[in-house]
Amino acid sequence: MGSLFAVSDLHVGHPQNRAIVDGLRPESPTDWLLVAGDVGEDFADIVRTLGMLRERFATVVWAPGNHELWTRPGDPVALRGVARYDALVARCRELDVITPEDDYPVWGDVTIVPIFQLYDYSFRVPGVDTKDESLRRAYAAGVVCTDEFMLHPDPYPDRESWCRARVAATRERLDALDPAARTVLLSHWPLVREPTDVMWYPEFAQWCGTELTRDWHIRYRAAAAVYGHLHIPRTTRHDGVRFEEVSLGYPREWQKRSGDTPKPMRRILGDEP
Image (tube, rainbow, N blue to C red; front, side, top):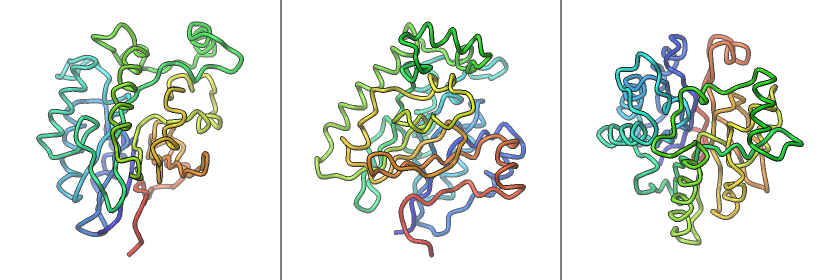
């Protein structure tokens, strides 16, 4: 049956990262790869990379990150918000890459659930009660996510409205699963806040998820929850469930951790050969 691997935050716009990604290979012809978002920023880079990975792995499952949803100056694909996401889903289907809009695949005895939930600013700065005050403190500290300028929520009025719509639609699908089914939950943003507690800049947590998913790893019987976004690769446990942060990150980050030879793929399930 092979293994279930995961990776995220490949950021292939950086030449050093692109070289690493070009070298990713399965261990066996039956290995699957979960991609937890932030493949890149430019539409063509995202499609090229997912297509290359699909040619190598038996199955590729992708959940988008914030960088895929950016509309950057100079990107020939100038779509914004939902239209950009829908266009990425359409290209993934042409590549036979599974997205959050497709039927959930089953690996062994677990259902793989790619999730696109965004964030709603509910991971606020400690001691703050409102989004506006939390953002004010972040701006005052000089800690502001680029999403504020490049991730457009069209046609929703704001990102939190898009997030709430995504959460409601995903929850409806999850509630319809077999109540005995175990899952692997794949998302770019962590489902719980605790992983953000180790970040250098606590103000950044408000761009890292939503309290609306805080019990999903329990409610939906997760064997593992896979995520990225934080660029802090590690394994933690929350309520007895294994959480895997599987980011490659930027060259300046992985060079400190791994030197010149990072190994970004993490085995989530399956035995080593």
